[in-house]
Amino acid sequence: MQVDGYVEGKIRTEQTLVISTKGRVKGEIIANHVVINGLHDGTCYANTIEILQEGKASGTIYCDDLSIERGGSFLGETHPTSKETVIAINSEKKDKVGNDEKPKKVANLK
Image 1 (tube, rainbow, N blue to C red):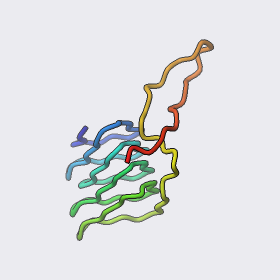
Image 2: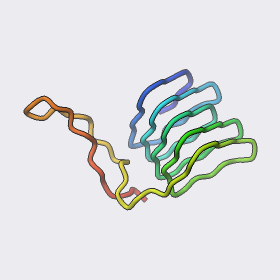
Image 3: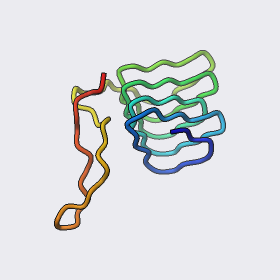
Image 4: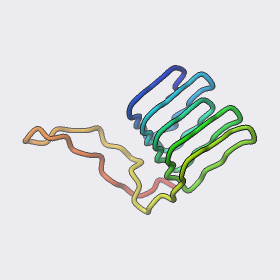
């Protein structure tokens, strides 16, 4: 998945999310791999996060494999992922009462 415009809210994918140089994301990201070459402001949960040369990220990152290229910037907090990480995402389902079911925690995909 690639973001070339502006997104505000939550993005969830089991694959790779790329924020291009013109892309802007404000909100929570949950993905296997995140590549930031634009702007991200919010919380990010991923197995791997790359902040490229033109990338700027601020907020909180939960990741064990973070890289920042020369020119890229990050302002915020980093935390390691736990052994159980919300990476594999089930689509939100309604239970019999009509309440939203939250994504289940699963083992890290490394």
